[in-house]
Amino acid sequence: MLLFMVDYIVVGCGLAGMAFAETLAKHNKTFVVIDGEKRSSSLIAGGMYNPVVLKRFTDVWRIKEQLLIAEEFYPALEDKLGVSCWYPMPLLRRLASIEEQNNWFHASDKPNLVEFLNNELSKEKVNGVDAPFGYGEVFSTGYLDTNDLIPAYRKYLANKNSYRLEEFDYEALSYNEDGVDYKDITAKNIVFAEGFGLLKNPFFEGLPLDGTKGELLLIRIPGLKINAMLKAGVFLIPIGHEMFKLGATYNWEDKTDRPTLEGKEELIEGLKSFMHLDFEIVEHIAGVRPTVKDRRPLLGRSMVSDRIFVLNGLGTRGVLLAPYLAEKLFEFIEENKELEDNLSIHRYKKFKIKK
Image 1: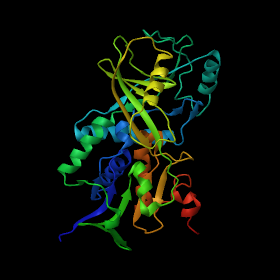
Image 2: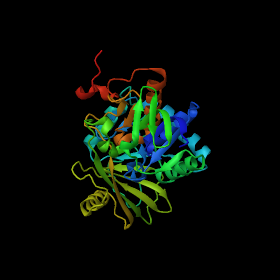
Image 3: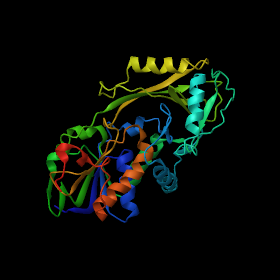
Image 4: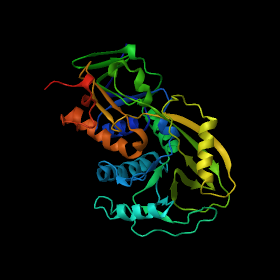
């Protein structure tokens, strides 16, 4: 049988797999992406990105580095694929009380937040929206339309003979000190970026991936004219033609992709708590985010083989994390740069490497 020889096999083509594949391409590495196109939380995500944890008014870990990479990475992908997917857009945080106003002013004076939070409140009147205490504006925000980006990227790879639509068969993978073999493919390394599917992966058994189900509504709201994303418990993202994304729920028990009545009602109740316009539900979707209890990603090398790696656990901030972490993992593999302790899977006892 004729072998297909590449530098890397990448398993999964959500945000993590796509970002790692693009990082490989940037460094002139050859690769094949294997993807079952199932359970990708990237495709059902709202795609919103922002540099601040708005519940506690704190900055996001390594956020300036993440933004710097993402703001180059996604526009370059748009040009490469001929699609529009990266939409910088203001984010307004609806303030619900005098106390929240005070908290906002306090946060906007913090040195690590001053460039991301407007220290003057917005009193903009939006038809149909109840906001008597105004809004706080967040800078360096927007959303990524994964529904346009990921299918376009899969098609691009397929045209280059670098994409295979199939469920990965773990039993078909063999490995030695020089590389890995999978069916008719031989590669130097393999990277698993399969999201919640990691729970079935025998090469990383015991990693504490704890999927969190999220549900999202696509809704039409005639008469709502707003050119910013709105965060008010739930989030509302304008995507044009009176259409909005409304999200998102968090369920730590249900690990299915099935939309639920409870999720829909929770989102509708959240919307009605501040908006008084009629709306129409166009679509209801759900998926399981690959989350970790310590809210840090999962990067590193398998204890089984030095040629098997993982890139996972991006959680709710995958838009900004994916390009940043792809670079970190590439440097770890190719340049022997150590991963930070709070990124590496070797922070866990079962995967601890003796020094």
